[in-house]
Amino acid sequence: MTGSADSDRGRAGAAVASRGAVELLGRGVAELEALAESLGEPRYRGRQVARWLYGHGVDTVEAMTDLPRAFRDRLRAASQITYPRLRRAQDAPDSSATKYLVELADGQRVECVLMRFDDGRLSACLSSQAGCAMGCAFCATGLGGFSRNLGPGEILGQALVIRAQAGVRIGHVVFMGMGEPLANYDAVLRAARLLASPQGVGIGMRRLTISTVGLVPQIHRLAAERLQLTLAVSLHAPTDALRDRLVPANHRYPLADLIPACRAYAAATRRRITFEYVLLAGVNDGPAEARALAALLRGVHCHLNLIPVNPVAGIPFRRPEVPVVMAFAARVRRAGFPVTVRIERGTEIQAACGQLRLADGQGRPSRWTPPPAVTP
Ligand code: SF4
Figure: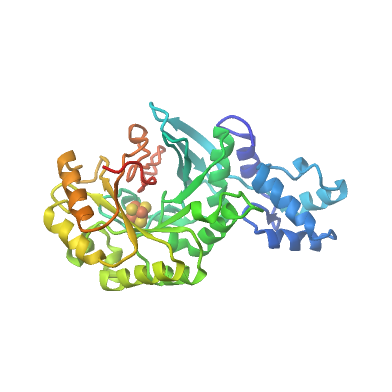
């Protein structure tokens, strides 16, 4: 894909509206093989289509030039390719991040972000829902409510738009944009598999991270899939009393259920869990909380990301002073946990954790937590 912000791909996506046509973007390789077969072609033609879609990012069947002309004609008549339409791209002044506002076929808008790290790593942060129903206290997304789940093509299409617009090879993907990924389990997992697969985008499962506020049944379900992706659990508080206030999902899935689910996930996948802990001045950043956190996570195969909260208009939390952050980190580290304090990328363009905000008045900012950046 090439083109301006108002891309040809986007126009194609918004314009293609043929009723009953099979949407190609988001289809797995096996499905594309079956589709090719149903159109009278050998199954390997489906793998060719996948390569064009996910490897090259083409937005028309016509561009799949190694397919026989007759098959292209049949495929074009039977299918459509609907990419998110890029509405705006905004670079951080220091070029550490670019935020993209994309529009889906029904007009819903979500944001995604490309993060650039000093060591050259490139990571895409994708949205999984339009809006969010979880209502975390420090994230203004909850104020805007929930609109709908995104489909798998709409989710991985964000990565393809970023890749094409930035002209880069994406090394990592984090499902940490708008929405609770595990509340849209099937679509997120389908997108993850296509992003990871060599026959898809080819990023690799170990370079994907899915976050959750702690939906316990879905954590168990994900554990059973034995995938090598990273699970990031948004913990944010070491006690139920405090977590009930910050993460309303805790009422339904309290720590007595969540932590054992995390242990089970780590045991089943042999993957270290990442716990996200947003530091809120005077709320959860004191010595007592640090001690309680260490006690809560004792024996869990995990890594802790501490995220000093980002300023978000309308959200009544302050970022702790640097010495408070470092003291908290030191306490947890002394208890034996690997700890990272994140330096947020893209704060200036409202693309950092808790800042994603639709710029068109829909008013649904979202949490955004990039991968670890620095260890104090
Ligand atoms: S932090 Fe995540 S799960 Fe919580 S309201 Fe924001 S987008 Fe939803």
